[in-house]
Length: 252
Image (cartoon, rainbow, N blue to C red; front, side, top):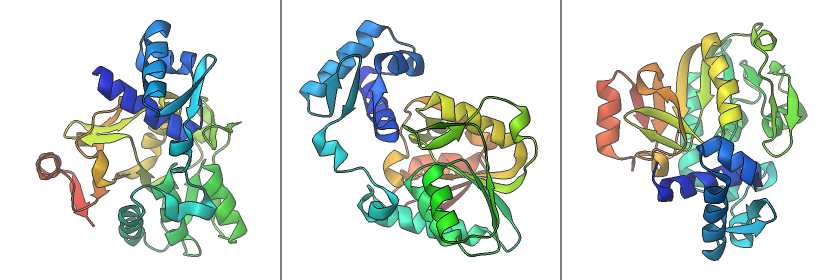
């Protein structure tokens, strides 16, 4: 990973968590504390984040790009993500059981599924809260410790996830290449990888701006992805390479 790629991944991690420490950067990217601090300082100088003692917070400019369930339309690439969510919802049939992971596109998929005869399995608190408030009848909550900065319930215990199974798992990432799907948050990626053993098909929901990016850690090789849903502006060479590997790519 180049310095530029690492710094981009750092900003992705910061966007997901809302804050980041030097220790987390060291753990996620396998670099020294000195290098982590240099990255923070450089990004602070560029106005990409706000440097604080032993870590960083989003800059005021980047805070405005954050979203919540009440401001979902302010999410980056909203229109494309909304189209991806609608296409993903079409895959789900009455009686299906699906795993939905975190992110704005995942939340929009939950909005599309809400009220339908589909069981939703998730550990993503904003989506859980939304589905409960909307009286979605079939909801499975994955347990574990609640991590406020990630808005997720996470556990590394194997036995806690053995009771569920799903027809599909819908997940996203920081990048998608011909190699596969990448993620920057190692802890949530590790938990999600355990879920792969409990679903029939893995569906990656990735907006076109992330196609061609290799940012973070390889979460799933392309050969283990069943379906990719992305925007029509996605890099055609990557789309072609994925299809050659047997991945069904749907463009919206």
